[in-house]
Amino acid sequence: MARVTIRDVARASGRSIATVSRVLNGQGSASAQARAEVEAAAKSLGFRFNEVGRTLRSNRSRTIGVIVPTLTNPVFGEAVDGIEEVARTRNLQVLLSCVNYDPLREAEAIAMLASKQVGGLIMTVSDADNSTAVAEARALGLPFILIFNQPSVPMPAVGVDNKAAGALVGEELIAHGHTHVAFIAGHFAASDRSRQRFEGLTDTFVARGLPAPTLVEVDYRAPRHGGAVAKLLRQAPEVTALFASNDMLALSMVADLRALGLSVPADMSVVGFDGISIGAMTDPALSTVVASGGPMGRTAAARLADALEHPHAKALKDDFIRLPFQFRPGGSLAARAADKNRNVRSYP
Image (cartoon, rainbow, N blue to C red; front, side):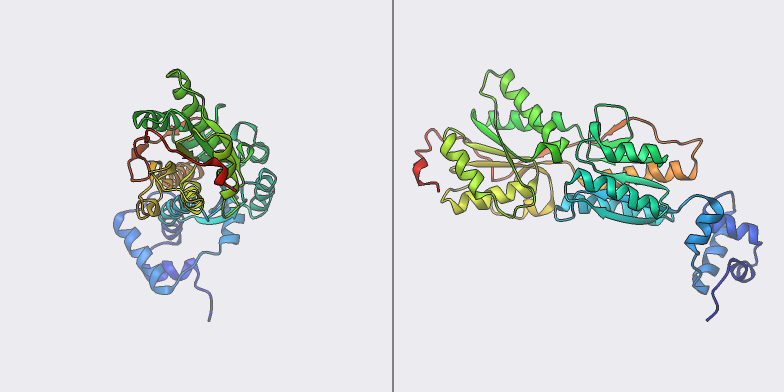
């Protein structure tokens, strides 16, 4: 069957080729009636743009690249859903790359996406302030915006104030009587967000004259972390609460504590970060900071789409768009018991 062309759409809609081009490219003005007639004709004919040809003609791709650490953590899936939602309405295609918290793979992903002639990038990097991927994007002249990252140097980014959110968790833990806590995170080299949350937590405890939280770094990619938890309990039996740097890690902590014969929250309280929906469905429900990925993805995609469509009038600004967050109480956080009476020798 012959390929449907823009000329066929013009003939079917009764509009000029110029009008059809403006409507289907989303550029220039057209009346509401003309737009409706052109879109109806294109749909009825099954018209599809030749994206490669259109890219070559306009010297600007209608494809954006998205780089996230993983999709096994639902918060990044929520962000991608938000990006896709906006991309559909703005006639953009999305190319996705997951880099598994590996800074080297971030730079490789930039090169791969650039070879696909993407018009811009939305990405989460390991360390925004010292990112090879950010430097690569700038060198290539690719407009980009970060999500989840909170850079201290000026660059386009959307996220929450991780340090303030970590401080909020500290206030909640102290309010429940927990004076000795631990922060469980992936390696800080793979997540500047975790480092910022730990800084906020630590500042709160130190400001109250309490011991600084114990830091435990683990491999995000490992399915279980029981060995790290057992080691923590042997070395710091006074710890009564764990703050995990994300909800998936917090849920892993709950399972690992149970495997060690401990109850949550009777023996140990656990708090997470992200507010993924599954955390509210567990028993006990997870106490966490809600900082959803969907709004980040939608906001970043809208900003990037504006910059691609109006590069001179709406260039991406080097500023951090701060989104709201909130603490969601759950059954995994309870008041500290007076005496845990733990037999630390029982932990393998």
